[in-house]
Image 1 (cartoon, helix red, strand yellow):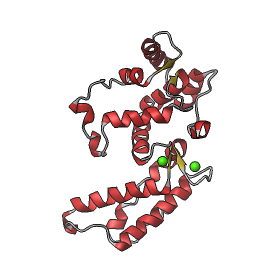
Image 2 (cartoon, rainbow, N blue to C red):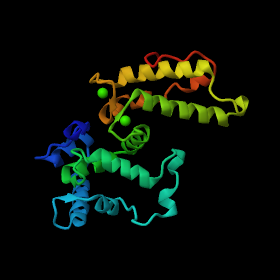
Image 3 (cartoon, rainbow, N blue to C red):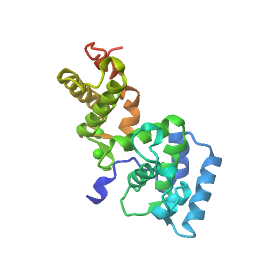
Image 4 (cartoon, helix red, strand yellow):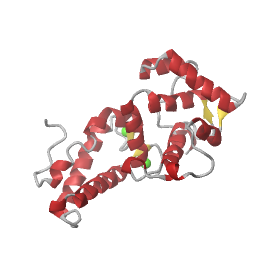
Length: 219
Ligand SMILES: [Ca+2]
Ligand SMILES: [Ca+2]
């Protein structure tokens, strides 16, 4: 537990600004505005609490229907999403967020649309919120994707996934994990997920079309 939870590659504590500029290609003016938001929320402290984080992310303290809505049909509300994001970026898990932790989070949320989308998917797949994706978590999401897709496709009616489709999903998941898991620890961390993102769910459709699922490594 404790420090072992830190699976994100944090920004350099001594110089988070240049780290953010190098890794995420942000402009110095963007970082200035994050720093201003952080400082104003922290009110003189070095760290921010979850409710100060919510304030920056414009999550109100009282539940509002808009924030509790399922965002983009992903099966998760904005409020839940930001709870999971908070847990992920509180890298040393001490219940508060430091400036480098907050900046890393802001980088992911705003460096580009695809960064933000990858982060959203990551926290959705990471069902237990431990900052890394297990084979089961990935398989569960693939199964959900495919089952939903099949349900919506009139040709299949209300039938669920077949034994064969489930078997193909299993091997697809195994292959995805094998490619994504660069440090070979059996899990996919956020940075690894970014690297393999383009393959995530890429060829799931071929399972439904009855064709043998294509290998992730062939074009
Ligand atoms: Ca997990
Ligand atoms: Ca890994």
